[in-house]
Image 1 (cartoon, each protein chain N blue to C red):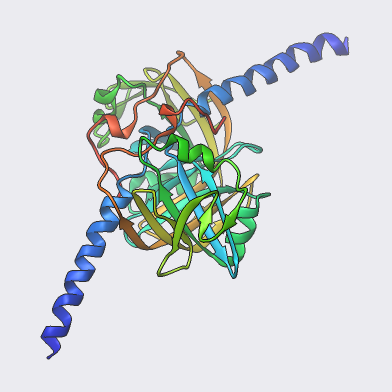
Image 2 (cartoon, chains in turn red, purple; image 1 turned 45 degrees about the vertical axis):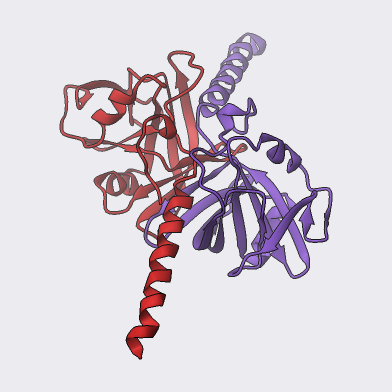
Length: 174
Length: 174
């Protein structure tokens, strides 16, 4: 008896999970390289789960995987920079899937300079960036939500459109 | 003397605000209709500042203008639904710039049914939706960040791509 009841239930649960995955994959994202510095440790990561969260003061919210080194460093440094990729920089994005080398003011071979307000690395090949200071956080899932104030920003090059996740063929969500 | 010092400072402040606006407008967003119900009050709003925030449990984060009726109702009901627009539904999006009429199971003339888990309105003309329960929030800016668990979801129609803000010519951010 137990088996005849549980089989449909399992099927419903699998179907509902598959639906949720499909639906959540319909959310729209950009692609950004987040960087931080804690003393002499510099780190970076490619992320998508980011949005503005207030006009005044200017705040953004970002969800970062809680078991990552990026999370640990930001959680301690309380600062980071967001580097915005242009539409033609998919190759740069893929170079940041993992961080292999930080040396000579380069992360994975990409030069950076230090942000004036936070010391976070600003990648000089990317068209736009902003520096942030964490002012709040929520730790309830496998990613931590950081709420942060935008304290400095710069535009190296005017672009019409940045790199967006839909145009890469990649997914992060579901 | 005072005037000769303050003029450049004012110019720098104006320039830095203009840069920040340009940079923050390079973030990428979708467009969603958020709905909620508090007892017999039904309300909705068009929003962009939303992202997934955890895989397990499935969480999303959304920033909602703190002085809005939508905020007040969600802050009390602790539930909402996110209705995802398809790429060809820009007209539906613009119909939700303001909520003029809720009657006969319609919001601004668009039919809804009640979400099974939260009672939030699910708009039947939109291809996908999910219901959420608030589990945390941050009130530090002119928008409130709600962190919420996805407790139910549905897909009425398979779509390749939803409506994204870049394709509308509209902006929300800066």
